[in-house]
Image (cartoon, rainbow, N blue to C red):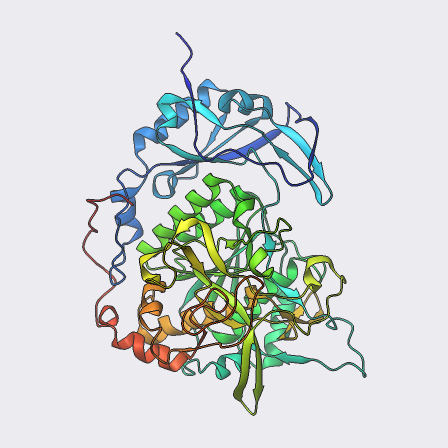
Length: 542
């Protein structure tokens, strides 16, 4: 039989990491895994009804992957001497996992894998487009795992003096409950019965630290569950590492909602790791999180087209199921720490189905907010104590070069892309949060801290309104003229400056929790509607 025509999978081109040099061909005998993402059985609906959520079973029936396509992938695996790794949720998640030698995968996907080295490490990559036989390519939207470069940074920053405290050192630090009170979070909910997912692309936690931290706060420690994605695991190391991001998420969200169950999805720091972690969390029928918090990110230009498109697809699925996603808007200002003289925004915060959270510097006296400005590092000390963890925070913000402006943002910037951030919260390390990481007290800030603060608020709101808030962005933007957000009227992040109303530095502003709750309850979609609904309209394509 003639060999099938090999068809390119759009968006799978990869630009080499800046400064990277090709060293050698990858070892043809090495065994690796890839995730192949499949199209939905039917197209997702164009319009989201924020009052209607779909169940996992309803999603699988209406939109899950076509069983015939999954069978074709099994045949593709056999023909290319690959293993089809059965998980049992291929239809629901629309993804299959394959493994094989690099030589077999190179033949199967028509690529040449090469080892690269650059000043910050090494990775495996391919210069060209991934190709598949045309009978498979028409239903495949992405192939992840052939390129394994480190893709994202944790968006925390440690206060410059933190970790070296002595009798002469003074610093400002808050506990999460103190900031929650300053933001008027409803006080009676405690997160009891609520579940949240946090996605971690490295690091780990120590149960003893969690117990000690919450004992010091005189709070109930949250229930924490570790879930592995693509063989990643809970691997705590030292305090000045990704452990700080993991503990920040657990300790902040847990302090705002002590009764919560925190499901920590550990994944490799690769495009495949993030894609698989988000998909697993969104479609987790056992743990069923109502919110997902992501404190990792990088400039949009660092991601491939397939990474952005497929993440956006799963984020849309989360919105359909009533799951709120918060993500850090980045700490590198309007340039995202890129040195190309251009403006950038962080991804995944730029995804329109994510609540992008920027950072502020908060000053309070006697339990009252006295001043709040955009976090721009104006007075912070820029010391290279522990690499990225000690740099100043200049809150990310601007306009996406990939996503068009979404309808919920109205006409704030005609002809511009999706605007970032949506909201802000305290995130400057100079007035950060007192956390315990690997036995050491650290004062930590960054937009990942702000994203965790907003995730905690979402959980409190969920409990208070007795239903999932879900895709929060449209509801929040409807309230931009209300007193649900405190406008930030000072600051800049480089190319952009604060202005009245929504702006690409501080978004809608910082939350006023009780007012936000009041207005959300008053909105039509927050009536007494039950979460269970009829099947969604699928006449148009997303």
